[in-house]
Length: 113
Image (tube, rainbow, N blue to C red):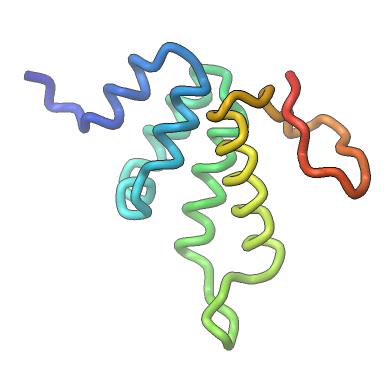
């Protein structure tokens, strides 16, 4: 029996980045925080830049000082939600979103690599 966390094994065995996106979306905050380095490394090795940045943003959000109302600072909240929505669309079949791709004004992020 492997001593690896099942998520790590599933990320390694995933057939493609859509499967990895689905796994990342289902991770609890505790697992993301504890295994962030491994998740980032697995995403990087797979060439899954959006997944890598998603993990990093989630960790930043968990560690961020909250506003007076208990929320995340505006830009961080927007980044986490944008990346979450992008991964959800990608895992559901949309083309992958390139972080460096220009996005049309007023349009939701379009995934395309």
